[in-house]
Amino acid sequence: MNNCNRKQYENTSVVLPGIRRVQIDSETVSSPTIANVTVITADSEVSYALPSGTVKYKIRARNTAKLKLSYTSGESGTVYQTIFPGCVMWEEGLDSSTDFTLYFQTPTAGTVVEIISWA
Image 1: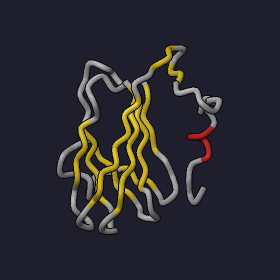
Image 2: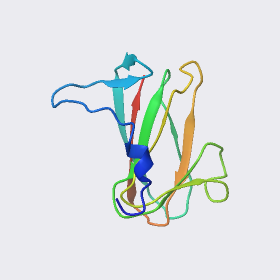
Image 3: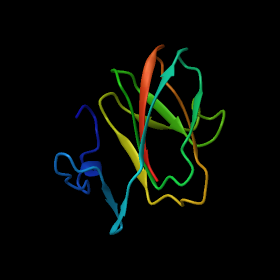
Image 4: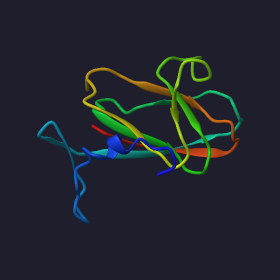
């Protein structure tokens, strides 16, 4: 788990093969959306607007690049959360009536960022 925080995996629900659902606060949500966003230029901010009604999302870089994540435009290079290579970061319990945009960058050009969200 290359520098991953093991604690983030402690509360992950076990899902049996073939069952597509996630449990959040005893409430089952569905409608997962998968997005693959390519960061074309190294150290250049890219944005992704989570689908309307999102209550949970996960994000990671597909290759061995470090990912810098921010919730404010223009701050992904100064005020950010680092997601180390091979790690996943997620947020859950989001207010479904609020729209969220993720801003991120990576020092490796051509990095594909994988984002899955649930509404």
